Image 1: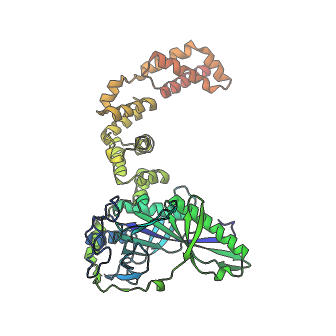
Image 2: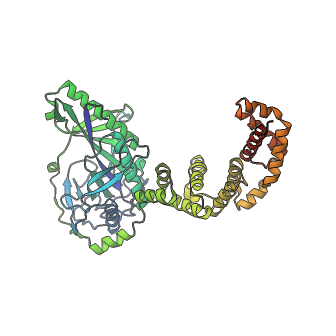
Length: 495
């Protein structure tokens, strides 16, 4: 990005539906997929005389996220009413938090596993709790252009995580979102399913254009309607170019243009103007008179902090230091979840070979999960049996090809590694027997020595096939290594 005449300045607003059975201020189910408008209550739709009652579990989950994001947490937090008029907000206000949010300033460190940018700390401005709105759908293909309102989602507990504008490229934003989603998954506070709306992202972006020893800031644009992290990255990249082109076309007025909200059109790969962007004063916040302040004691925070478990960043660091794994390998395994890492640690301890265990986890096991669509929690091979398989491969009893056959057998039929080896007819070949076989093959193929003298080192490989015909249980790698040593010895002896 340094060769561009501007810096991209990006802040994110991430909306996370919390994994509670009931809504934030009523006991109505939050389960996804019900018939429209069947999961509502007088509280959800703002009927006169109803009073909200806070969901304690939602408050607990929001607090856990704040602790994991290193947020400042005031002892008292309160509820506010945020006023705006949308068809999917029947009360005409949203119960949210404004000046005393549950989670204040914090941070999340991010590292690009591909090394595309330096590790950085993204500051969190706030992570406040609020109720979700309903969902509007617009059928523009019908002649009537119907708009429909589904209030099933209205009142669902929503945690809005707002960052400072600390990201300087679309790639940084995408890596931050990946890391945040992984953290939320480890905390088990949300399923983070973007297709179902459990995690939604709005991005705020503008440019700092360098011109004649000056820095000119373009107006901030909020981008909505992005349904994947890849879409976020594409939308930010497009918007940066659009804003720069707009500044080139009209340098005099662009800096005084109003803030705006634009929607991402994934089909056309463009952002489109939706409306002028609201300021906080437009929402007319005031304290909710029906809800008392919530008090969080230091003892409550200490208890929750002790139960956070090992979080992704710390887990990556430990895998690197304890097992001497490259950062990329540690990241791949941590990204699969706690159960995957626990299985790896069991195999590494049992086999005494962490590097080989990591290779099996990242290659054969991930390949199997991807091809079958099976969740790792249903993976069939016990850690003890994979450890035994790794041990047989490490001591030369099984070459790579045979080890994969044993792995496939265990997947299909179960049992122990020993039973799989016996069933497949794999018999370990004695080293002296293998050496004698290789001596015979070299003696019977003198042209191999002549070709090796001419620099054709691959000629030794021709003996591997002959050895396999004589004894299917031999290891190709061992055959090649022994034959090569014999050829080199005979050349040294003057053959």
